Image (cartoon, rainbow, N blue to C red; front, side, top):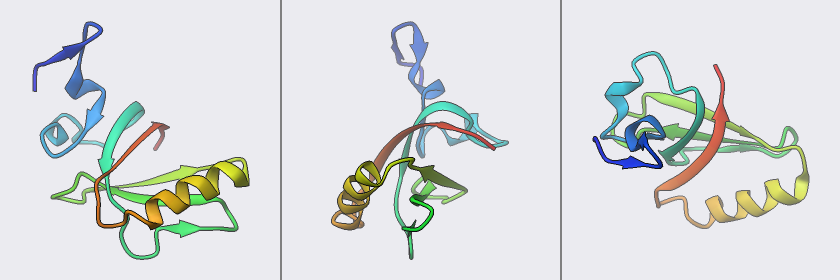
Length: 95
């Protein structure tokens, strides 16, 4: 994947099946991830949503943390109603 957007290689902004090889030690920093929900994908008390990526290898687990209930509930509802679909999440991912 060598396409660019704003002078940055798309593979450096995105974790998906095609760019997984660029992240041998994990996916950190500001990134888009192509993920999915699996099993119990949330903790309502902690306001967290759990995603796995990339789609084929399921190599990485991500925790999407929310500070307010309103945003958490909106995102939770969208994921709950689309569990069978690819979820594109954006975040500043940390180890």
